[in-house]
Image (cartoon, helix red, strand yellow):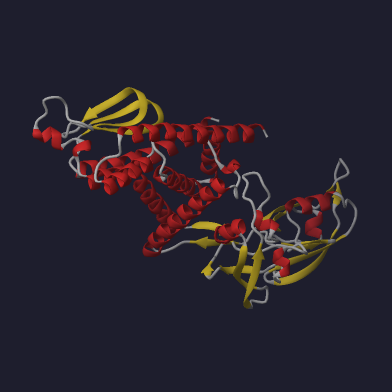
Length: 440
């Protein structure tokens, strides 16, 4: 629990601080006086002042941060103080200052994705498992063992890349061109017709529903104990289990269950050894509980590929991945508004904290990908034309640009009330979804 909270606070601190740094940096470039830059809210625990008079503070509640600018000049202000005030800046500068926060989050996502590309990640190869009859994949001619090499003309190396490439088509439906390499190494294109599916956080995997699942991990022998049934049967370290009795390419759990149920029974075992298929006979010995044991340690064999890019390609993919995620998220919001996608996909702080903890436990790369995704979400949310958010201020500035003068106080007051109402509804939905997931 403590680890999850710390992972969440670190993520929130980094993302919000970067957002506010965007506002701060452009404000200073435009000559606006920044009175305080605070990490956190509430009582100030630590402060220092820079040469420009800005107070840099760390506050007690680490749930965000803020930049306090001089909006209007003080009474009896000098011309220099008037020029330092935000509300006395030209429209283009005020808009740039407001826009800088969301853009900073998007830039951060680009940087994170670029760093992940440089570091490289080990991911399962995009090879599919058994294809259920009657599914769209079966109708398109997909077969177990096919390796996906491209989706809609875009090359894919790993299963995660393939899932991402399928995401939009799975939710909206339509025909998708998929390049595959079969088990004989022949490349061909297959055309997959997908019905529109509803994306739900706890719903069925739409890719599996289409008939495409990752090829299950096979069992590989890590160690053979001396004078065991496995040694007597000729099993060796490094053997990949291709078949055990009537089980084809069994995973760890089916393999162990089959052995336990076969005490005293001779089992045919097909293994892949140095690229050659070997057939062995193994008779599990019975233990004190009557369960079969062969005396070998078996682990999962999941073919992996290293996904890594050079500096230039990493930056390019950082921009591409950020743009794709931003556009996909925006379309999902539009589909929620039209009712095509369930509002159950809206997540609140509890779910986000849970994912922060989970990804941090998995490793640095998973946590960095989580940070990039949430940073894009923060940038997108703040760009929505909802009063009280950055996008709402940009909407007022657009009105000002058209009218030639600022929006009326009445219009801004109504907008603020509408914005508060919308944010209250959104937060209520998010907390309700969090609580539902927590107790379901």
